[in-house]
Amino acid sequence: MKILYFASLKESLKIANENIPASTNMTVNALRLLLIDKYGEQHFPNNILCAVNHEIANDSTQLSDNDEVAFYPPVTGG
Image 1 (cartoon, rainbow, N blue to C red):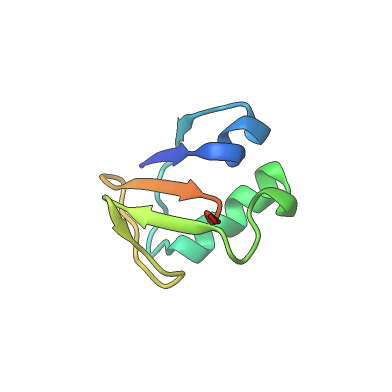
Image 2 (cartoon, rainbow, N blue to C red):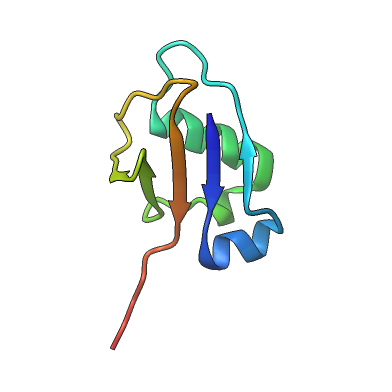
């Protein structure tokens, strides 16, 4: 699956995207834990937002190899 990183996450990881194969019954939460192991917990806090195929996803969303998964930090405004 294609993983996309946006905003400050993209800047801190120094990559915009990468490909990671989906394992059997992989969820967004399992992917996030894999990315925490790879890059560190500071980059993937509990409030990080995730979209799968352009739709907001939650931790239990199932993933497949054909999916596009985007991670981006929460946005604040004022």
